[in-house]
Image (cartoon, rainbow, N blue to C red; front, top):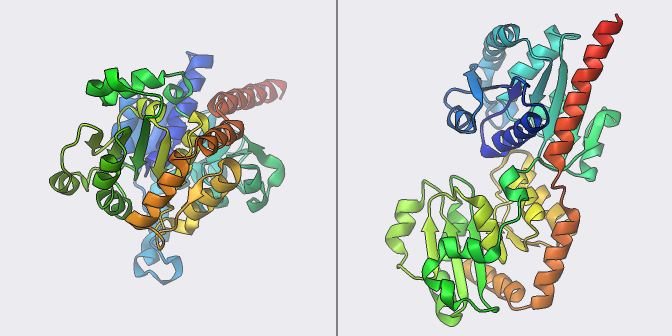
Length: 381
C-alpha cells in the first residue's frame, strides 16, 4: 500500500517505486491511498494503479497560531478510523509513505495498531524531512533518503538508507537530443547547428509567477540577439492564459501550460531554469543537465532553498533567490552558462556523477526483501 498525494513531488516517486515492483514481481498487488480531491485521484489511476481515498487534512501554518488547527486532533482521529478500514480491507504486507499530510493517517494507523502485521517504510524526497515524515520516522522500519546529508536529521539514523530519489522510468531511458528537439521545433529540424542552445523553463505544474515575469521581460531580446537560441517554457496551468496573451508567437519559442513529455524536454535541453523541488532536482541530476535554480520561498520548512544549495554543491547549479530574481539577473546567469562550453560540460559531468538513476529499482528490491524477511519470521514462529 502506498500513501502518497498532495503534490507531484510525493506522487511520482511512489509511482516510480510501484512500477519497479511490478517489473520485479508482476504478481504484486498494489493499492494507492490518498485524498479524493488531490491530484493523486487522477494521476494514480492514469498510471494504471487502483486508488482509494481517506479524508485528509493539512496542518495550517503557522502551526501553533492557526485557529483552524484546533480541530486537527478530531480530524486526525476521523482519518485514522477510515485508514484502519482501508488497511483491514487490503491487509498490506508493507506500507510505503512518500510524505505530505496525505501519508500521515495511513502510516500512523499502520504503525500504532498493526505492529507485526505489516512493515512501514517512508521515502523522503527533500534534503530535510517534512513534518509528516519526521514524525513517522520514529515508527518506520526503513527510511529512504535522497542525500547523505539528510541522515543527520533523523533520530533513528541506523534505519536510514541513502538511495537517491525514485525517478520515472521514461527519464532513465536514452533519448536522442535531435529527436527530442524535432518534437518541439519541427520546422527548425533541418537548420540545427552545433551552436544551437535550448533553454527549458519550469515552474512546477502550477507555475511560478516570478519566473514567468522574468522570462516575459527577456525572452524577446534573447531570441533576437541569439539566432541559435530556443526556449521551451512551461508557464503552469494557472498562468498560461495570461502569458499566452502577452507573449508574441515565435518559431523558436514553445509556450505550454504543462509538459506531459518531460523525457523529451530534458533530452532537448542544454540548460534548465527551474524551481528547486526535490523531484525536479533529482531529475536534473539523472538527466545530467546544467541548471539555474530559483527556490520558492513559500514552501514549508524552507525545503527548496536547502535543495537548491545542495544542488549547487553537487552539480554546480547556479542559485538565484526570489529577492534577487529579475530579467537582468536571470539573463546574465543564462548567458554566463550558455556562452561557456567548458562550464556547460563541467555542470553536465557533475550532475551525472551525483545522480542515483537506479534509486527506484534499489528501493523496490529493498521493499521486497523486507516482505520476504517478514514472511520468513512468521513461518519461523
